[in-house]
Length: 235
Ligand SMILES: [Mn+2]
Image 1 (tube, helix red, strand yellow):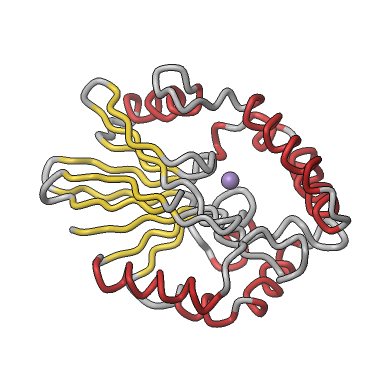
Image 2 (cartoon, rainbow, N blue to C red):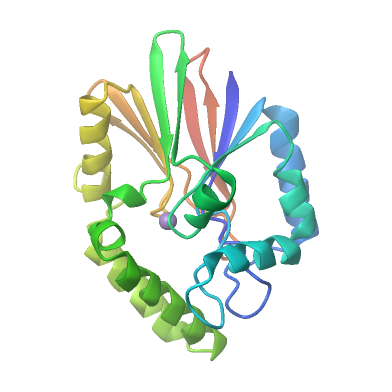
């Protein structure tokens, strides 16, 4: 099967706190390209930004508003060739519409797990209110135009998460490959870090779809029949 994976679009409500950074019509062309070339398109979490409303605490309403702000994209994602797995910024999709937090396929002898990856983040798991407060404050920092501060806080968050472009040192990849070993998956596919990756760990493979927010375009192509996997980024 030929599968494309995108994640971390962070589609918001269209204002200054909306981190999507694409013109919707242009992005729809990108989606048409994926639909034409792949049987399935996996949406691997943080598709919708539901944590940066003007007031905190109503992600279900923010999900509705984000969909209204990006109506054509929302309609496109309802097509049957899209498979949606939620992340931490669109966690509410689980409660509102039963969106799963993982998706498993078996292709030939290859077992593949698709999951966003926030399950690795201690702050998200154990102090969800604090992590969501941080995201909400980030929304306001953007609204008032402190983009340098926003970037600095993002960089600190990357450090806190122990992320690295070096796959042998990246704590996120280490966590993912421990899960792969425990649950006997050959391929782990995640998003969340916004760092696209295709890294071999022993006889297992780690893939990350990167991000389509902030005007970036990034996707994974997976041909399970040929065991061919690749990362594509526009930057
Ligand atoms: Mn995430």
